[in-house]
Image 1: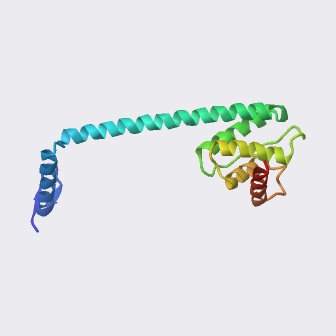
Image 2 (image 1 turned 180 degrees about the vertical axis):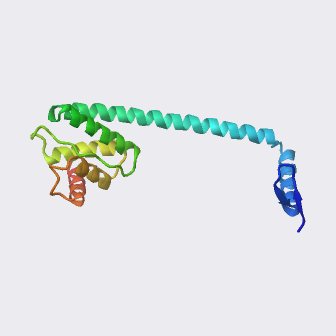
Image 3 (image 1 turned 90 degrees about the vertical axis):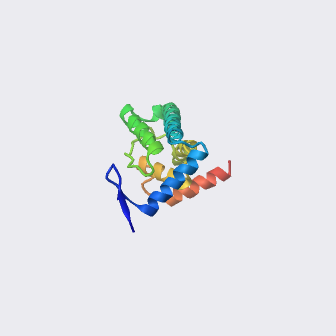
Length: 165
């Protein structure tokens, strides 16, 4: 096969070049000039950036809501450092699929395992997580209360409590 070296140094086989020229002529006849295609490309890039910005803003709003919810629900049951760890864990949960969670200690004995499961469930469902992910969050964050409980058991209890309410 014959080849041709073009100005930018690329090598094209003549049959490829013919195919490219035919496609160019077809687009030109249909009004799809290269500048039109470049304009479409720019518009797509702008739309993608706008969408990414919307997603980022939505995520920040979710994190803000979760922070407010956790502070309201847990402030009386944790010291400030532990609450900050919990807030950080929740933020990680919204942004990474399987993050490392730092365990938190409760300063109050008033919360039951059921309370902590409900807390995890409420946050998890808000950020569209499934039962196994919610159970893992609860188990890894509230280590002491759930030290003798398997993730599968927590997940099962989440399903049971959901179906009875």
